[in-house]
Length: 89
View 1 (tube, rainbow, N blue to C red):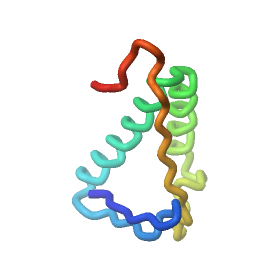
View 2: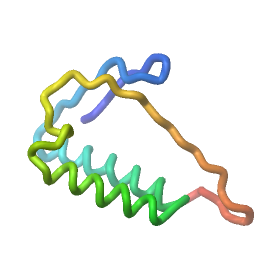
View 3: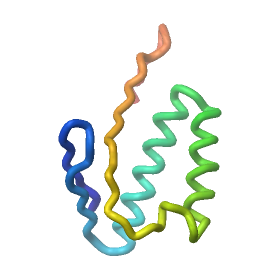
View 4: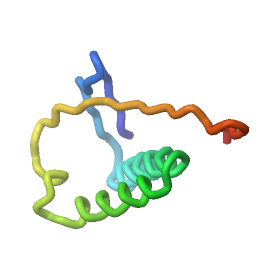
Protein backbone atom coordinates (compact mmCIF):
# COMPACT_ATOMS: atom_id res chain seq x y z
CA UNK A 1 0.00 0.00 0.00
CA UNK A 2 1.20 3.48 -0.85
CA UNK A 3 0.14 6.29 1.46
CA UNK A 4 1.34 9.82 2.04
CA UNK A 5 0.63 13.00 3.96
CA UNK A 6 0.97 16.51 2.59
CA UNK A 7 1.47 19.92 4.12
CA UNK A 8 1.54 23.17 2.15
CA UNK A 9 1.41 21.25 -1.13
CA UNK A 10 4.45 19.07 -0.33
CA UNK A 11 4.63 15.41 0.56
CA UNK A 12 5.85 15.28 4.14
CA UNK A 13 5.50 11.53 4.71
CA UNK A 14 5.53 8.68 2.23
CA UNK A 15 4.93 5.08 3.25
CA UNK A 16 5.13 2.01 1.07
CA UNK A 17 4.29 -1.34 2.61
CA UNK A 18 3.17 -4.74 1.42
CA UNK A 19 4.48 -7.48 -0.80
CA UNK A 20 6.36 -6.83 -4.01
CA UNK A 21 3.22 -7.77 -5.94
CA UNK A 22 1.10 -5.31 -3.94
CA UNK A 23 3.62 -2.48 -4.38
CA UNK A 24 3.87 -3.11 -8.12
CA UNK A 25 0.09 -3.23 -8.36
CA UNK A 26 -0.29 0.08 -6.50
CA UNK A 27 2.41 1.73 -8.59
CA UNK A 28 0.83 0.46 -11.81
CA UNK A 29 -2.58 1.68 -10.70
CA UNK A 30 -1.15 5.14 -9.95
CA UNK A 31 0.56 5.40 -13.36
CA UNK A 32 -2.64 4.17 -15.04
CA UNK A 33 -4.73 6.75 -13.18
CA UNK A 34 -2.39 9.59 -14.18
CA UNK A 35 -2.40 8.40 -17.79
CA UNK A 36 -6.19 8.26 -17.78
CA UNK A 37 -6.54 11.76 -16.31
CA UNK A 38 -4.18 13.14 -18.96
CA UNK A 39 -5.88 11.23 -21.79
CA UNK A 40 -9.28 12.69 -20.93
CA UNK A 41 -7.97 16.19 -21.62
CA UNK A 42 -5.12 15.60 -24.10
CA UNK A 43 -4.38 12.22 -25.73
CA UNK A 44 -1.02 13.49 -27.04
CA UNK A 45 0.07 14.51 -23.56
CA UNK A 46 -0.96 11.09 -22.24
CA UNK A 47 1.15 9.38 -24.91
CA UNK A 48 4.11 11.65 -24.03
CA UNK A 49 3.69 10.71 -20.35
CA UNK A 50 3.64 7.03 -21.34
CA UNK A 51 6.81 7.31 -23.43
CA UNK A 52 8.75 9.32 -20.85
CA UNK A 53 7.65 7.07 -17.99
CA UNK A 54 8.71 3.98 -19.94
CA UNK A 55 12.12 5.50 -20.72
CA UNK A 56 12.70 6.52 -17.12
CA UNK A 57 11.65 3.12 -15.80
CA UNK A 58 13.85 1.23 -18.28
CA UNK A 59 17.03 3.25 -17.67
CA UNK A 60 18.99 1.94 -14.63
CA UNK A 61 20.79 5.32 -14.48
CA UNK A 62 17.51 7.27 -14.33
CA UNK A 63 16.94 9.56 -11.35
CA UNK A 64 13.86 7.40 -10.74
CA UNK A 65 16.18 4.76 -9.27
CA UNK A 66 18.32 7.03 -7.07
CA UNK A 67 18.24 6.05 -3.42
CA UNK A 68 17.40 9.46 -2.02
CA UNK A 69 14.96 11.21 0.27
CA UNK A 70 12.67 12.90 -2.27
CA UNK A 71 11.25 16.35 -1.67
CA UNK A 72 7.99 15.96 -3.55
CA UNK A 73 5.26 18.35 -4.52
CA UNK A 74 1.70 17.10 -4.61
CA UNK A 75 -0.12 18.24 -7.74
CA UNK A 76 -3.84 17.89 -8.34
CA UNK A 77 -5.24 19.08 -11.65
CA UNK A 78 -8.94 19.16 -12.31
CA UNK A 79 -10.07 20.27 -15.72
CA UNK A 80 -13.58 21.50 -16.42
CA UNK A 81 -15.31 19.05 -18.79
CA UNK A 82 -15.99 20.26 -22.32
CA UNK A 83 -19.46 21.66 -22.86
CA UNK A 84 -22.02 18.89 -23.18
CA UNK A 85 -19.66 16.29 -21.69
CA UNK A 86 -19.38 14.95 -18.19
CA UNK A 87 -16.31 13.65 -16.35
CA UNK A 88 -18.51 11.19 -14.44
CA UNK A 89 -17.64 7.60 -15.25
